[in-house]
Length: 172
Image (tube, rainbow, N blue to C red):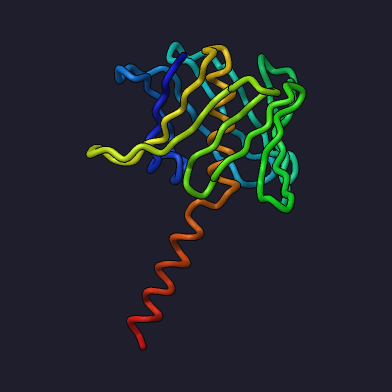
């Protein structure tokens, strides 16, 4: 099992993101923008090798991202909605990402096998996303999924509503 950490502040600002292991060693670098058609996320190993590129191909309430490995289209990540809420599918891997996205806790499963689990960790050095990945070969794609999910669930929207409501109460 591998445990990875990404500083939430960098994810939210869409800056270059260094991904660290549990010992503080830098493992991956993520660059790019996401949120518009044609935007892309590029994930590199620390030796500079491009491991995965994810490009947004559909901009809608249910967007789609294509996954490229070594320049070839490998699959896609799509957002879905049902009566129970949001979920994401990763094809052709048949991964299903579900959970409490707004509170930063979710998992990805393939049938009954855990692929990844994401939690938010609060530390004195700042807020981090903690990603648990049982099989290290899944780590690069799981990191890309975490960035997309964070962006598409609009984690900052509830905070903005709370701030506006508290300002309105102060004005009264």
